Length: 225
Figure 1: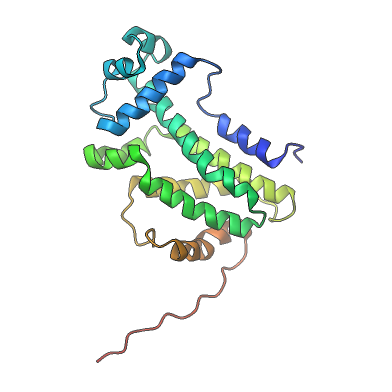
Figure 2: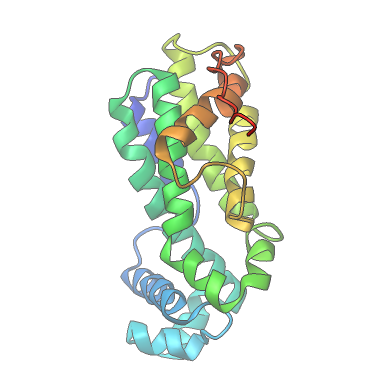
């Protein structure tokens, strides 16, 4: 059983990917890359553009990121960490695991559908976005799985959730989120927070709790005229 506090466990999960220690220049480069991706997408963003935005030379960028793809992944990880911190941090105040994970689902849906880089990519390179969040996106998956596992582990250790392989459960939930990033067009009620909460209770929470979902009120059918 872990002796770390819930905030410590979450902070450790969030800091686990893409961290290279204290390097202000690296931070500036990644900030500039995120801003450039938001402005024009990834395909059109050159290393030279990012270097100019960061106020450094191209060789300074290449010394830290020898390949352009390394820079892209590091910038995406940095943005994912920021988004996940915004989602997960406030959830620690919710003690009930069902309520917490239900709210996490709603927050994650908002983040996925409103994230500026993802929205830009949907405009500039929609044919590539599925590949960017599937092929070669292992570090992003690992980060999401780590954060979800940290939240689940807190509840398992406190006796509020059944014993389970939290890493495996977290992977199932992370893959659900990644699929929504890759293809946001869905039958799920992503534009209705309350309906999305009910979706989570019916379809996602049973994976975590191991219990049957609560009974749904029967839908009223329109009368035939």
